[in-house]
Length: 450
Image 1 (cartoon, rainbow, N blue to C red):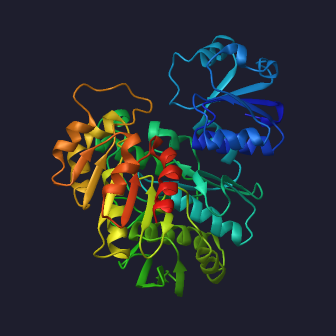
Image 2 (cartoon, helix red, strand yellow; image 1 turned 60 degrees about the vertical axis):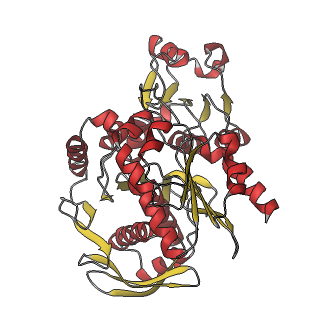
């Protein structure tokens, strides 16, 4: 597609994290951008502040006249939008050019040098680390992030068009629209079984993704995955490996062994071995691209993280409050391990909102095992997102599986009062649903109380 002939771009589901990054990109490149979303959020507020027209009711009459010409308008949608959506139905019936978000991302990146980060966990953090360290070492890039970077307060880094950095999302097989030069796979744990059916089908999709890498491109894989490529790991025999890891003043300090040298005394500010792993692969990809290791190490030390990825809301000697997007059992275990490493012996309260009925059903036992490790567990109702309820699959059903006497099912309105009853000094909010909207209220109440 030739974007030069497209003047207007309309987004159905513009408030999604991936959709909004595209909207920001096109708005910055002088296209007329507008869209629909069902929910007003800080993301839609930011878009509106930058001149993007957004409405929140699914009515064709709400669409600005400028976007009603099929010859000059591209319609972008997310698979989370139901087929019955009135506006999307109108565009289909009137022969507009309609593309999925992933297809548009593929078109934008096709003629660039593309870095793509794939894996069931770690994509957003790895992509934001990679985008940051490349940007800090003067690469002319555009990075589309799946979260809000703390360094840029945005899910878009826009500093040129030679290079693109993107998340390669396995959901709905979206990553098969990409043709990267350098790609990595961080993990292939079972997920999205509502789409794939089986874990084996998911793995086959990742294998298909590796075949999308351009000729003379490179694949990076977490050590131990059943794929051939440049390997990385932590204290392992891998092509790129973190060694001599220690914690100094609340930060990781470590060395990285590369195929050619050892980079010593690198500082990284995010806690958790999972985040350290994300940093190693970002560093490896940037080194293979040819950026100077010393400059990359300096850039890594200035990386601040992604909002809702082990984000410290409160960090004092008396109380720590961390918010995290973790919504898969492996991610919850990673948060648990990070907390235990950083705060050994402290009492930890975890508040978790399950995301999707299907995911809760598919991994109920794994969720129970990961959650029961915490000293106390508060469980919210399942956030449905795009799904309808599944009979028998409820948070109460999940709660029964958690082998921990200090567990309770609560509503969102009870979060603050339940925290106040607890003696825990480490508070966690976990989940990919609207629990994130509660964070500012929790932080405010804890700040007043302390």
